[in-house]
View 1 (cartoon, rainbow, N blue to C red):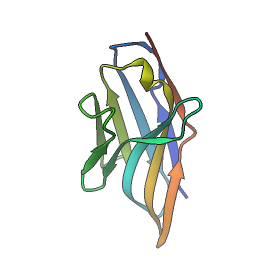
View 2: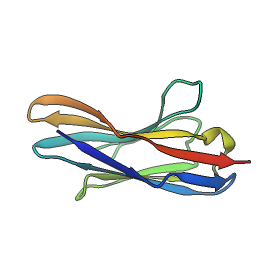
View 3: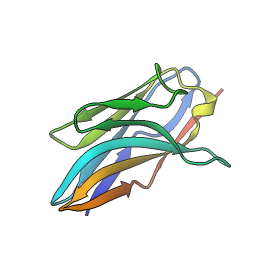
Amino acid sequence: QVQLMESGGGLVQAGGSLRLSCAASGSDIRLTALGWFRQAPGKQRELVATITSGGFAVYADSVRGRFTISKDYDRDTAYLIMNRLKSEDTAVYYCNARGFYYTEPLDAWGQGTLVTVSS
Protein backbone atom coordinates (compact mmCIF):
# COMPACT_ATOMS: atom_id res chain seq x y z
CA GLN A 1 0.00 0.00 0.00
CA VAL A 2 2.54 2.58 1.14
CA GLN A 3 6.28 2.36 1.56
CA LEU A 4 8.20 4.73 3.82
CA MET A 5 11.88 5.39 3.22
CA GLU A 6 13.65 7.07 6.13
CA SER A 7 17.10 8.60 6.12
CA GLY A 8 19.27 11.01 8.04
CA GLY A 9 19.91 9.41 11.41
CA GLY A 10 23.35 9.15 12.93
CA LEU A 11 25.67 10.25 15.70
CA VAL A 12 25.94 13.90 16.67
CA GLN A 13 27.32 15.83 19.60
CA ALA A 14 25.02 17.61 21.99
CA GLY A 15 24.10 21.01 20.61
CA GLY A 16 24.42 19.82 17.05
CA SER A 17 21.84 19.32 14.31
CA LEU A 18 20.48 16.55 12.13
CA ARG A 19 17.87 16.35 9.40
CA LEU A 20 15.63 13.33 8.98
CA SER A 21 13.72 12.59 5.79
CA CYS A 22 10.75 10.32 5.19
CA ALA A 23 9.61 9.65 1.65
CA ALA A 24 6.25 7.97 1.16
CA SER A 25 5.43 6.08 -2.00
CA GLY A 26 2.59 3.93 -3.20
CA SER A 27 -0.30 3.77 -5.60
CA ASP A 28 -3.81 4.91 -4.87
CA ILE A 29 -2.93 6.49 -1.55
CA ARG A 30 -3.95 9.83 -0.14
CA LEU A 31 -1.95 10.97 2.83
CA THR A 32 -3.50 13.17 5.48
CA ALA A 33 -0.50 13.39 7.78
CA LEU A 34 3.18 12.54 8.00
CA GLY A 35 5.07 12.56 11.22
CA TRP A 36 7.84 11.31 13.43
CA PHE A 37 7.70 9.32 16.61
CA ARG A 38 10.63 8.12 18.69
CA GLN A 39 11.38 5.36 21.13
CA ALA A 40 14.25 5.46 23.58
CA PRO A 41 15.52 2.30 25.31
CA GLY A 42 13.12 1.21 28.01
CA LYS A 43 10.54 3.83 27.11
CA GLN A 44 7.32 3.92 25.15
CA ARG A 45 7.10 5.30 21.66
CA GLU A 46 6.16 8.95 21.73
CA LEU A 47 5.13 11.63 19.28
CA VAL A 48 7.86 14.01 18.15
CA ALA A 49 6.11 16.03 15.46
CA THR A 50 3.50 15.61 12.80
CA ILE A 51 2.27 17.69 9.89
CA THR A 52 -1.04 17.44 8.10
CA SER A 53 -1.66 17.68 4.38
CA GLY A 54 -2.87 21.21 5.06
CA GLY A 55 0.42 22.15 6.67
CA PHE A 56 -0.71 22.16 10.30
CA ALA A 57 2.17 21.03 12.54
CA VAL A 58 2.07 19.62 16.04
CA TYR A 59 5.12 19.21 18.26
CA ALA A 60 5.88 17.48 21.51
CA ASP A 61 6.61 19.95 24.29
CA SER A 62 10.10 18.52 24.66
CA VAL A 63 11.10 19.47 21.11
CA ARG A 64 9.06 22.60 20.41
CA GLY A 65 11.37 25.44 19.47
CA ARG A 66 14.24 23.10 18.60
CA PHE A 67 12.73 20.83 15.93
CA THR A 68 10.94 21.84 12.75
CA ILE A 69 8.83 19.57 10.58
CA SER A 70 8.06 20.41 6.96
CA LYS A 71 6.58 18.65 3.96
CA ASP A 72 7.28 18.56 0.26
CA TYR A 73 3.80 18.20 -1.14
CA ASP A 74 4.95 17.23 -4.61
CA ARG A 75 7.02 14.32 -3.32
CA ASP A 76 5.05 13.18 -0.26
CA THR A 77 8.20 13.67 1.75
CA ALA A 78 8.48 14.99 5.28
CA TYR A 79 11.58 16.49 6.82
CA LEU A 80 12.45 16.88 10.48
CA ILE A 81 15.17 19.40 11.21
CA MET A 82 16.52 18.85 14.69
CA ASN A 83 18.57 21.63 16.24
CA ARG A 84 20.21 22.02 19.65
CA LEU A 85 20.08 18.28 20.15
CA LYS A 86 20.29 16.92 23.67
CA SER A 87 21.34 13.53 24.99
CA GLU A 88 17.71 12.84 25.87
CA ASP A 89 16.85 13.06 22.18
CA THR A 90 18.71 9.79 21.66
CA ALA A 91 16.21 7.26 20.30
CA VAL A 92 15.07 5.34 17.28
CA TYR A 93 12.97 7.70 15.19
CA TYR A 94 10.07 6.24 13.24
CA CYS A 95 8.24 7.86 10.38
CA ASN A 96 4.46 7.52 10.44
CA ALA A 97 2.05 8.05 7.58
CA ARG A 98 -1.72 8.30 7.91
CA GLY A 99 -4.33 8.59 5.26
CA PHE A 100 -6.30 6.37 2.94
CA TYR A 101 -5.62 3.57 0.51
CA TYR A 102 -8.63 3.94 -1.76
CA THR A 103 -11.25 4.38 0.99
CA GLU A 104 -9.51 2.21 3.58
CA PRO A 105 -7.71 4.02 6.39
CA LEU A 106 -3.97 3.49 6.46
CA ASP A 107 -1.52 3.91 9.30
CA ALA A 108 1.99 2.93 8.23
CA TRP A 109 5.36 2.93 9.95
CA GLY A 110 8.90 3.13 8.67
CA GLN A 111 11.64 0.80 9.83
CA GLY A 112 13.20 3.43 12.09
CA THR A 113 16.44 5.36 12.05
CA LEU A 114 18.74 5.69 15.05
CA VAL A 115 19.69 9.10 16.37
CA THR A 116 22.44 9.15 18.98
CA VAL A 117 23.37 12.37 20.74
CA SER A 118 26.62 12.25 22.67
CA SER A 119 27.14 14.53 25.63
